[in-house]
Amino acid sequence: MNGARKSLAETVAGAVAGGMDEAWERLARPTLPPTGFDPAMTESLPEQARRWLTHVIAPGTPLARAVILDMRGHIRLGRWIRFRAVQVHDPPAGFIWAARVGWGPAWIGGYDRYLDATGEMRWRLFGRIPVMSASGPDIDRSAAGRVAVDSLLAPTAWLQEAVTWRTGDDDDTVVAEWHVDDQTLPVTLTVGPDGALRSLTMPRWAQPGGHPWGEYPCGGTFADETDFGGVKLNRTIRAGYFFGTDKWDSPSGEFFRAEITQARFV
Image 1 (spheres, one colour):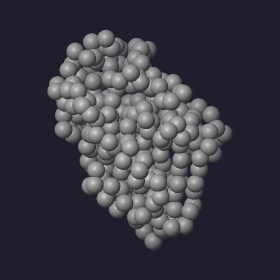
Image 2 (cartoon, rainbow, N blue to C red):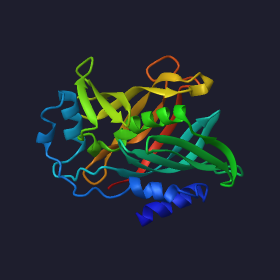
Image 3 (tube, rainbow, N blue to C red):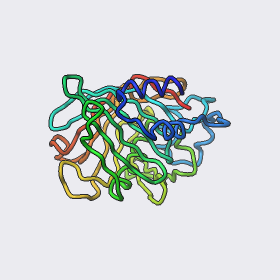
Image 4 (cartoon, helix red, strand yellow):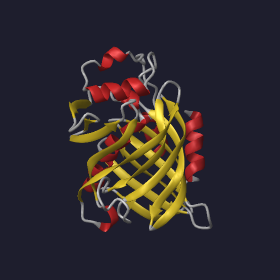
C-alpha cells in the first residue's frame, strides 16, 4: 500500500491533498481471508459468464475484492491529451481514479471517486488552481455507474452477492446486474468463444458532450490480454458514450483510450 500511495502522490503531483489518503486506504484494504478460485463456483451462472470467469481467473487464484492499477493513455477533452493515472477499484464499494492530464506547460491533476454512496470530481490546474469541482445527486448516480462499468478491471469481484446474472440476447452476451448502494445497474458483456471479454456496455447516467442529464449507452472494447498474477486483464481499453451507435466517433462518443501497465489485486 505504501508503494501505491507513493504512485498516487507522484501521479497527481499533490493535487489531491486532504481526505484522499483515508479513502484510498479504505478501498485498498486487503481481502481477508481470500478464498481461492474454484471453477465449480461458476456452475450456477449463465454459460457466457462461466466461459469468461474460468478463462480469466486461474484455479486457486485468491478472489481479491479490489485491484490497484497503473495506466496511461489519452483522454479527449476537445482534443486527445495524454494522461497517466492510478486507480483503486473495490466494487461495489467504490473507486478512486487519480490522474495527471497533459505534460506540457499546462497540466491538470485531480481525481474522480465514489465512496459511501457519494460521487465527487475535483481537478486543479498545475495542481493548485481549482478548475472543476463537482458533486451532488447527478454525480452520485453517474459515479455509481462507473463502479459497475469499471468492475471489468476486477474479475475476481464478480462472484459476490452484489452481482445477479441473467442470459443475454445471443450466445455471446450475458448481463450482470451490479447492486451499488440503492442502484441496480445492468452491465452487458460480450464474451468470445475463447472466453475473452470483447466488449461491455450499460446505460449510464451522464451528460456526455453537453447533452442533458440522462441515461446513455456507455461502454467500450478490449484487447491484449495479459496475466497479472493469475488474473487476465485486457491491457488495451477504448471507452466512451454512445457505444454501438453512429455517435461513437463523435466528440461526445469515445473519449478514453488507455493501456493498463500494472495491476495488483488486494
